[in-house]
Image (cartoon, rainbow, N blue to C red; front, side, top):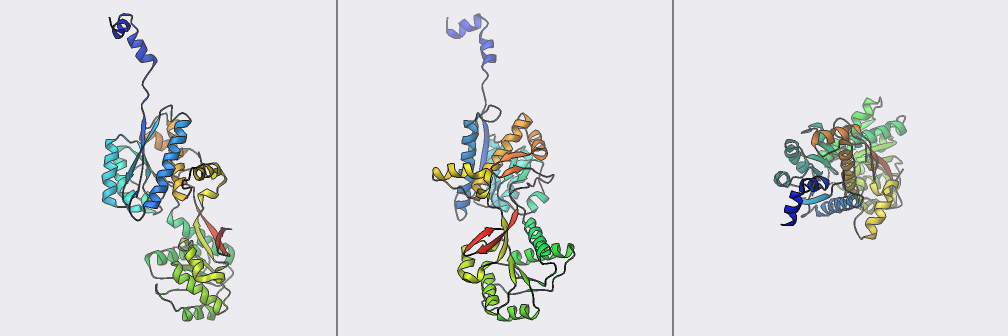
Length: 367
């Protein structure tokens, strides 16, 4: 008689199967550009995902089940993103931390929505991603682009409403779009600019432009555009002794801006998403990552936080089914390395948000 036959004859085989149920793995994924020109950002996402999974498994997993991570490369390409999204369906993935580029996120979201997979992008900022949300399981843990205009517009009104405001843009889609959005916020809040005009991107002579600003005696200049022109305009403002404050967007968060302006760049204000590694909640994780020689940069931490939030929602829902997890995400508050995260009815998170930085002696510092 075999051991199995003995158990069966003793009526113990069924009992044994009930007493020691098999615990299934939960398969999740991180999706981003793992090769090509944006591979550095994909690497940040991978490191954050692997660390989150390792930490959750070390703490007992999610609902007692072990997480298994799939890593896929979307190349920041919409067609490739759709292809890998369909691959993840075949691998029984229930959650995706991804994608990075808006084209990939939007294209893949339709696939995930149809398959009952929860998606949370740690990087996509384009409003369309959630404004035209494909399903209740689509979320983002990245600041919306239109929030930047709101923060900048309120800064201008709160600090300069009694001053002469000029709004400039470089006629590019980014620069004009941002300047127009800032102007709309300023006007909605009851303040009018003294002048608004565009200039040509790629120029290197801004004497006439700054002369116009000086003639209008402007006190603050909002500039929608990139750092090369912004730096030259700031230099010319300094040369003509125009003491106006320069305010701009996230394109000025680069050392290249200071390389253009030097000391003339002091006092320049810009809006940029809060840097996750600066949050007190992230300090232990940052130390662990750096001790292991890994990245503790933006997308590492936002990817880690995305998996944290999803895992806590699964615990609340009691399972990984889309409807329960999506409801938990929209109704709960989640303890993450970014702080307490909540999501609105659109799937947008409260963190990280844009804040104001000031260039001081070659370093942009949070105000």
